[in-house]
Amino acid sequence: MARGKFFQSVSRYFDRAAAQSAVTAGMLRQVKTCNAVYRMRFPVREDNGHITVVEAFRAEHSFHRLPTKGGIRFSRRVSLDETIALAALMSYKCAIVGVPFGGAKGGIVLDPSKLSSGFRERVTRRYTAELIRKNFIGPDIDVPAPDYGTGEREMGWIADTYKNLRMNEPHPYACVTGKPLGMQGIPGRKQATGLGVYYGIRTFMEQADDMKAVGLTPGIAGKRVIVQGLGNVGYHAAHYLQCDGKAVIAGIIEREGALYAPDGMDVESVNRHRLDTGSLEGFPGAEYIKEGHSVLEKDCDVLLPAALEEQITAENAGRIQARIVAEAANGPVGFDGEAILSQRGICTLPDLYLNAGGVTVSYFEWLKNRAGVSFDRMFSRHEELTKISLVETIESMTGRSVSPPVRRQLVHGVSEEDMVVAALEQTMIQSFHQIRERWKSRKLHDLRTAAFLLSIERIAESYEQHGIFP
Ligand code: GLU
Image (cartoon, rainbow, N blue to C red; front, side, top):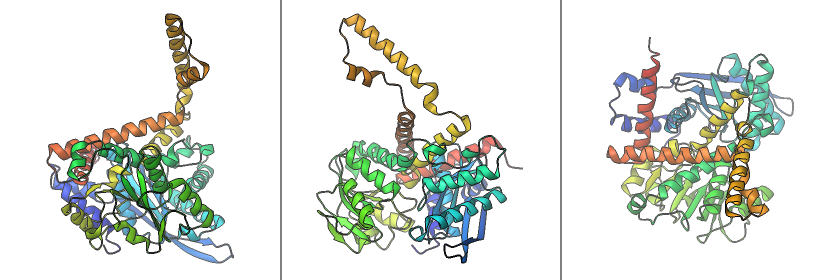
């Protein structure tokens, strides 16, 4: 797919699903269109004292629910088209997992691998000030989060800038999610997208009929996975697939090249090697392939693109050997690429469902910031006391006592992270079954069409209920 065609690809997925719905044409246009865009250029001083002009965007796709929500990325390929496409995906994603937000996305046209920490900070703070000036950020307006090339550090700068410029607001830190824990972040947010990807794949793989249709036996254990991207999403997804799911990580693709080992490699060791040396090259026990992109086409059961959009296109889709393509990134499979994959019987687990774990946990963080209290604080001790009295009752009834380590394990009160992870797991399982139900009952061609249809119907219903049309 040519550059600049990302929104077109998302729109074609949208139209294909919309054709199956009873939603009126005018409403469909409203659900599809991007409602507001802020395009900015601002000056920032480089480390050597020179001024550089930075180009950036924020797109708010849909206001059926407020605030709008979506990450901010640093990437050289950021464009207006890309930002709008990603904002649209956020609207559909939130609707799929029942997060009551509209969709948004921000992008800054800079290569994240080439930025000093000081320059990054100046850009991030200035970008935040621009958003404040135009009312494109705020706990009830639009709430950014991490995305490609950004993380906790940038979210901390955004929160701090906002708090300082909006002193009088009651919950200024609710203006952004994915913050560091010490700045009212939430435990579990960092791994949330990757963990959600794992739960999504696991749930699909438990469906014996669907697995049979793609020529695989049910279950993750022993399935060979190739991961593209060892960033936050790819790393965590691969980690959970390997450690919890017992999958075999057969390939890892990064910017500089790829590793391939059909019998598997240890994700932790690969990650450590790359952090230490700055490259995948030289990792023992796997073949290093300089032309990394070609590893997408190697033999495996699951291909997990977890980097950027437009990775599988009409050009390479005919050579993909995986049975399942799991979209951990946003938009990695273009419309024309998907048509070829599906003709060849390859199943795609769509991004708008599969990577929705990040925004799900962002929702919990936002709720916590607004409540001004962590989730466990009100329950943890009460739960512990209830469990202690249960154990004591059992002990007195049986005349036997529980050993101290077992007692500790049984009676501990729930932690905030336990609650977040359990709620994320439940969301991913439930949402999958809702999509699958649509897929089967409406006899739709694929899971993506079912997911889009579900989102479209939910967003249209929300617009109807809120009656915002003049
Ligand atoms: N950037 C992430 C995404 O694409 C997270 C968005 C959020 O948490 O608001 O889903």
